[in-house]
Amino acid sequence: MATVFIPTPLRKFTNNTAKVEAEGNNVSEVVKALTNSYPELKRHLVNADGRIPSFINIFVGDDDIRSLQQEQTPVKENSQISIVPAIAGGKPVSKL
Image (tube, rainbow, N blue to C red; front, side, top):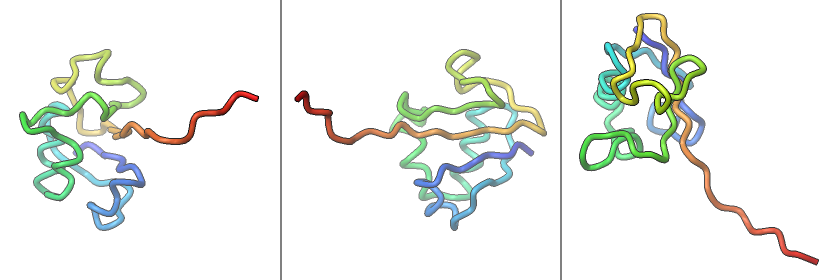
C-alpha cells in the first residue's frame, strides 16, 4: 500500500491522522480508496466530475503528478504520496 501524507487542514477529516495507507495502482485509485475510508475528504479532494481539482497539488515522491501522467500516474506499493492544497488569502502589502 502507498503511504498518503495528509496536510494539517485536512486531518480533521481523517481523525487527526497525519499519514494513512491506501491501495491503488495509480493516483486516482489511491484517492478513491482514501475517500472511501474517509468520506468527508471527498468534497475536498475531488470535484463533481470525480477529478482532482487544479488547486490540489499531489506529489508521488518528489514529483508533481502534473508533470507526470496526472491522475493516471502509477503508484507502487512503497510510494509516498503528498497532498498539498493551495493556500490563499492574506493582505496585500501597502506601498509607503
